[in-house]
Structure formats: structure tokens, C-alpha cells
Image 1 (cartoon, rainbow, N blue to C red):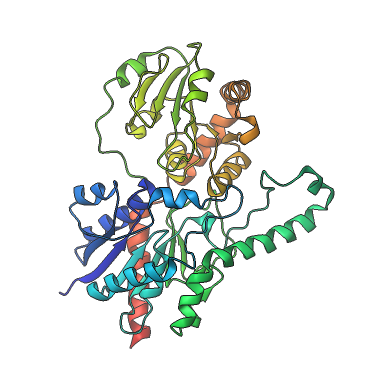
Image 2 (cartoon, helix red, strand yellow; image 1 turned 90 degrees about the vertical axis):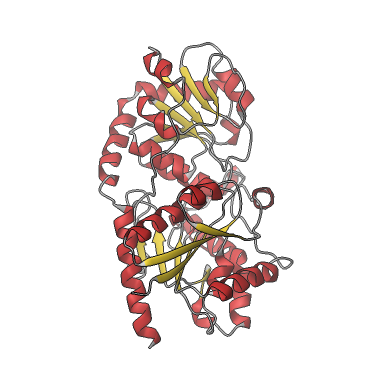
Length: 409
């Protein structure tokens, strides 16, 4: 039997943007029906290699280039008048060479979605999209930099204005993708977000992001993509477990924009809490454990609280292990996550003006002293545990591809 050829496209400089597609690829490979090759670049392509997949080095935005374009309140615009054609040609040439039956792409590979729809290539286009970045998620909270006087307007008006602003920025984000689609005569594939995939898989739980406006025929929640770490437990873990103090994990993730090491060093300098610190470099800080990179999945089960940047992978790991959260955030996507977590009663969030020692300590005490946070996150963890993302992803891709082939006949 001829195998179905799959091209998996990731941004290999950020962990979550690699592991989501990698987890799906592993599940597809287990069926024996798919031949999978990766495209990407960056540190986390080592995970692709370790999993035994072949991969093609592909020129992408580097992480620093992306962060330079981050607007802390509204949107990240990474395709521009100067670069959109360049990245389209890169993606088109690669897809044209491989001629896959299916492409599975994560964020920052949207130009590949355009290339997959060209008549001579036409591959089944699967987009693994964060729920918060989809056109089906609507934010209804006030960005930090809006002036206080804005609150004089009725909430109904503010929500209406927020929708208009939201749609404006979605179109602005995708204007060059939309332009390229129109140039190629592919108008029917244009959506408010630029490229309309054949199938969108949300690596999120409905418990956090319901997305009521999504078309259930082509938009599917598969639940959080959580991979248990393959790295050995850190050598200090046993000592950390025996520590009688309340235990806090500080984890900034791979998409934290600002180094807050000094703030945490000053905040937790009295030895009241046992601190495991996932930092950007190995160095001794107070009596902290860790102070370097390690697999937080090994440490979280023993923690009473996690302080994080509200990145998706970290959030779901905390929910999995029933650990309440205190969340900071560096950009708008993380702010959305933080707001939803606080709304669900599993976290507190601190905005920029409250990133001070006294605010952090007050929030830590509030979470640790109020059992509601632990109860809420335990209930959410039990609900989210019903997802089998690997099984669901294979089911939706297989069914979608069969329908796609019938439509092409």
C-alpha cells in the first residue's frame, strides 16, 4: 500500500511550536499509513531528530525578529511588504519539491498554506492553530495601555469597538497573505485571517476556549498537546521534595520576552519558600533549586504554585498537575491566556504596573491561603484529562483527507 506523504512544518526555535506538530506526526506514524518529513530550523529541531524523523532546513523568521514586531497589546505582525514574497517563494519551492498529500503547519508557516493551494500542488492543508489566535476567539477585555477615561463608555459600546479593532488587526496581520492569495486567483481560500485551511486543529481545551463561532465540520478541538518529558529528573529534585517549605516553581518558558531574574531574586530572598527556578542560564540565586534549564514536568507534581509567563505549554502542564498559577505575560497572546485562567479561578495575573516585590508576595499568599484555586484547577484538570489528542488528531486528519480526495475527483 502506498503511504500518504505528509510534510510537517514547524517553527523550530520555539518549543511549543515544534512539539504540537511533532506529537501529531508521531501519532500518524504509529498507524503505518503515513510517510512524514519535517521542515523547520532552530534548536528544537533536535526533538524531531530524536523522534527519528527526517527534516529539511528551511529559512524562517528568527525568534528575535519575531519579538521585535510584538505589540504588547494588540498583535504581532510578521509578514511585511519587504518579506512576504520571499517567504512565499521559500515555502512554495519546498512544497513543490516534496509534493506532499498533506501539509500540517503551525504558526509562522502561513505562507505554506498559500503554497499548498496552488493547483499544481494542491495538498490537504491542516493548520494546528492556537485557539486565541483564531478568528473564532474574541477578546473582551481592556488592553493595558488604554487610558482610564475609556471606562466612561458603556460596556456594550466597548465590546463593539473591541470587535472592530480585533478584525482590523486580524486583517492587518494577514494582509500580505490575502494579497498573495488574490494574486494567485485563490480568493475562495481567503478568510478574515488570510488563509482558510481545509482543517484546523486546536491544541486547546474547550474548557478554556469554547470558540462558539467555529465551523464544527472543519474546526476541531483535540485538547492540549502534552508530552511527558524524556529528560531525566534534575539531581536536586529529591532534596526539593523533602523540603518542608511551600514549594514554588518559577518558569519563564521559551517565549518569555523579558528577563525578570533580578525581580524574582529580590522577591524571594528571605528563604520563606522553596523555589525551583527555570532560568535562562545556570547560576546560583539565593537558595533556589535549579537555576537553569530542566524538564518542569518532573518538578510540577511536587509544587504548590507556579509563577510563569502564561505560555500555552506551561499553562496546560500546570493544569495537568493541578498546580495553581500566578501569571505574568510579555505580549498579547499570553495576556489572553492569563485573563482566561483568572476568569476560571485557577490563577491570578499581574500586569506591568504590579510587577513589584510586594505585589508578587501578596498574590502568592492569596493563592496559597485560598483553597478555591486548588479546587478549581483540580476540577479543570479532571475535565481536560478526557482528551486523547493523538487519537483525535489522527481521526480528524484521516477523515478530512478522505473527504478531500473525493472532492478532488
